[in-house]
Length: 165
Ligand SMILES: [Mg+2]
Image (cartoon, rainbow, N blue to C red; front, side, top):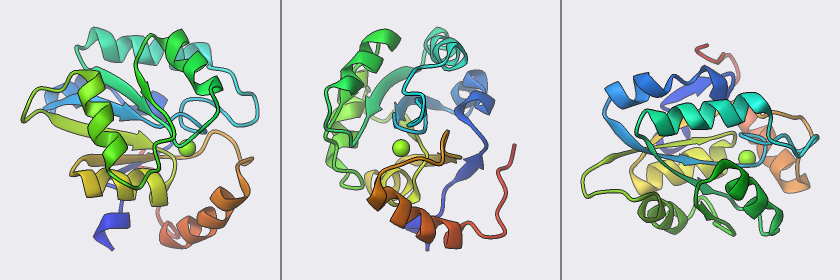
């Protein structure tokens, strides 16, 4: 199922090289928040993730957070990282990615990459929007009950698939 198949599957955002994304032609990075950048267990941004975001910026990549979370707490993370956010995104609907790309400052024709920990919302939504989709392993096992249901489907889709690095 091409819509549900990630273009790349990695162990964490931290193994994504900003330079490599840039060299491959990507200019806009749309990032999921929960269990991609922030663990649902600790609920804090780690110094490593903060440093990685700053590397993306230094590389000249344009960023926006795109989160299905409807709690205002996600604004705290956006403020801490100094990047815009679209919340209540209703992924996999592609509209929030369109808004996110605009908020990031996309120029027509620029290539977009979406990074997230869920196939059903992040990967499927990225593909509906026409972006490249990087799936990362969730930062925590803890998640919302319906996300855990989707994880069962993901487990089946990812059986025998290991993160590339
Ligand atoms: Mg997530």
